[in-house]
Image (cartoon, rainbow over all chains, first blue to last red):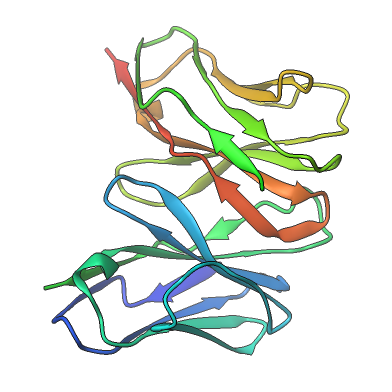
Amino acid sequence: DTAVSQTPKYLVTQMGNDKSIKCEQNLGHDTMYWYKQDSKKFLKIMFSYNNKELIINETVPNRFSPKSPDKAHLNLHINSLELGDSAVYFCASSQRTSGTGELFFGEGSRLTVL
Amino acid sequence: AQKITQTQPGMFVQEKEAVTLDCTYDTSDPSYGLFWYKQPSSGEMIFLIYQGSYDQQNATEGRYSLNFQKARKSANLVISASQLGDSAMYFCAMRRARYNNNDMRFGAGTRLTVKP
């Protein structure tokens, strides 16, 4: 069983479209994240949720809207896609008060905007 | 604001030799956690090692060790006996406070290439 799973793994779409990426974790963690990795491999935090509550909302365009229906799921919806949105988006989870609290990452979703 | 700096965009090492990947950080928080992650060409992010700011000893995990120098705010990763499979991107990361898991920031990464 995959601990943190994202779908889809690959997404190719046209500018102006709306798309969603889904993330689920079966680790029982209470915190989930979205990170964006650009073409230079830089990893930037976008959002963080703790028990379905938005904790971190970085300076991300409001075209990006996260939704956490429960603490095991954190989806990312992107409106009006732009060329600069092309990147790999990683979902991750962690347990806030347990052990080292390292992040467990999904495999990433590669978004290409044409 | 916290900042993590990895000054080596790329590093080369001969197989079976040791290599040190540099990481410096800047924070005013007294409590924080430092992490190293590996990202092979296949793209997944793999957790390697953790050091807490109050930990007295340097962390070790198999061939990985963390050279933690708190006064210098550095947390260098040492990989001993390099293997071809160690070729990957390596990221240093910092979490702001021991139990504040919500804020984990990454450095720009170092691409390590192991030569046979």
